[in-house]
Length: 563
Image (cartoon, rainbow, N blue to C red; front, side):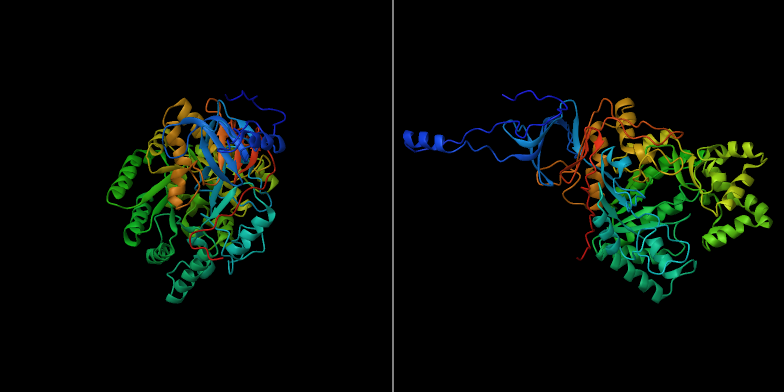
C-alpha cells in the first residue's frame, strides 16, 4: 500500500517507494537462502523524478485522470499508477494539475544577456517562439539605425550558438521575418524587387531555414503586402523545405479584411499551412465585424485550407506609438521619420491626415492610448499614463500635439499600450477550436523598463484563472490543449506538447483553484500565482515556487535545419 507523502518536504528521501523482490524459479531452497544472504535485494532502477497523485491533463483535450508521471533524463518514461516506483526526487502533486509545459506561439523574446525567462517560466511556459517583427537574423546588410538587437552575430547559427553558450531556462524557436529579409536586400526602397533581388531574398530565406529558423513570418503595416508576388514566392520556398508560414495581421482594423484575404490566398495558392498572429479587431466602430472574420476562417477551413490563429486574453494591445502615423512618414526609415516629426510645418498635415485620424481612433483615441516606455527622463515621467492625461498635465489643448511632440523628443521611439478591443470578441475568438493562446510578449523580469503590458507576466495563468475557473469560457482540458498540443501541431513540433512516455519532460504543475495573474495595466510587474513546479527538459526550473537558476532550455531548430 502506498505510504502517505508529506507535502513540500524539507528533505526529499532518495527512495520513496520500494520495489518487489524478484522471484527466482526452479532453484533449490538452500541456494535461494544463500543467494538472499550474500546479495542485497535489487530495487527497481529508480527514476530521476517521480510526480505522484496529481490530476493529469495530458494536452490532447481528453478528460483528466489521476496518476503519476516518471521522468528519467530529459524524457517522460512512464505515466499511470506507478505504485511501486522509486526515484531520486519525489514531488507529491496531490491537489495539483500536471500538464505539458505551455508553448507560446507569438513572442518578442530575446534571451541574450538574461536567460532566466522568469515572467514566462513562472507561469508554466517552457517554449517561446520569436521572430515576428525584426527577427534576430539575417543581419548582413541592414540599413543603419534599423537593428534593434545589440550583438555581433549575423546569422541564425551564430545567434543560436550564443544562446546555448550563455544558457537559457526555457526552450526557444525563432522564425525568420520576411520584412527582415527584404530590409537586408532592399533597404527602405518601397518598389518591387528585381529578379536579382528576389533571388537574393530566396537565398537568405533558404540559408536561414537551413541554419535552424523554424519558418517564415510576414509583417505588413496595413492592407497586406505591397508586392504580393514576392511573398508568395517566399511562402512557396518555405513550403518546399517543410517549414511553416505565420502571418502578422498588421492592420487589425480598417484594412484587416485585405490582410485576411491575402493570408487565405497564400494557403490556397501555395498549399502551406497558414497561422494568423493575435487575431482580434481594434477600434470600437469595428467590433461588430469580428464574427464575420471568424466565419471567413471557418469557411476557408471547411474548404480544406489549413488555417489557424492565436490570441492573447486582453482587451489592450501593445506596440510603438509610431503605428499611429501615416505610412508616408515611416516608409523611408527611422531617421527620416524623426525629421518629419520635428518639422513644425508638417504638423497640421499630420493631424488632418486620414490615416493618422483612423489609426488613432483604432488605437483607442486619446483616452485609450497609454505610454509604456520612453527613453529620456523628461518623457519617462509620463510612463503608465493615458495620452489625454499627459496632454492635460502639459497644458496641451490638443492631445494630437502631445503625441507628435513627445514622439519628436524621443526620435520616434515610444512604446505604448492601447485599450481598444471588446471583451465579447476575446471570448468569441477564444472559443474557436483552431485558436491557440499566445502572449505577443517577452520573457522578462521585474526589472523590465517602463510600464509593460501585463501579458508578459500573466497570459497563460489569466486564461486558467479568469476564463476557465471564473467564467467557464473554456474547459480546463481545452485551455491546456490550446497552450500545448495545438501549438505543437501548428509548428509541426515532434515529441512536445503532450504528456506521453518518450516525449520530452516539459511539465508544469499548478493549482487549478488558485492559479491566476497577479498584475494589472497600472501595475504589470508581478509574477503568476499558483504554479509551484515547472520542468524544462526534465530539470526543475521552478521548484516550490522559486527559480532554481537551471539553464535547462534548448534552441529547437526547424525542420529544414542542416548541421
